[in-house]
Image (cartoon, rainbow, N blue to C red; front, side, top):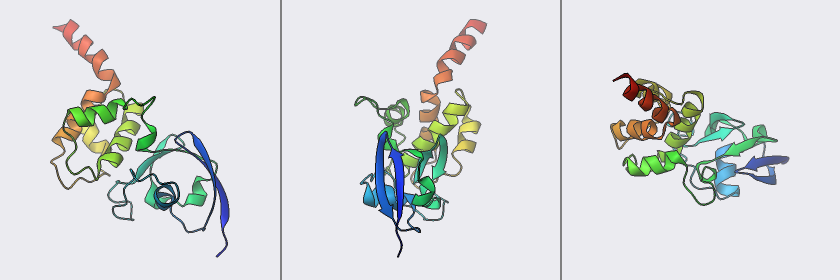
Length: 166
């Protein structure tokens, strides 16, 4: 089968590779680049376990061909940590006990990150709506919603406003 050359910036490192045209991005990231934090759940885009950031937008990597990511920037959950320090969402998921088996965690964090970029102070219903494409079979989502809420950068600002109103 013909192979196609792709250049993808993943977590700040540019990778040049020859891939089959039908190779899914999730398999390229896991199998070729060794980024096993990305889970393969359904291969149909229903569970969200494979969610990554693709050029600044949340994307399910099981629905994207590796050749479609040519020239793109991809951020995975492994790429969120800076200087060995966890991202605020990673820390919050741990602190709020939002991890059960951990299978959905990567996708939940990446989808929540996308939400918080657009809405720095979402309410519980907005969080649930934003995460509806990510399935968790272990929890009732309560701690996941709490974790996203706790990590929201606008929450501190709105808390100060609430306190000044009382």
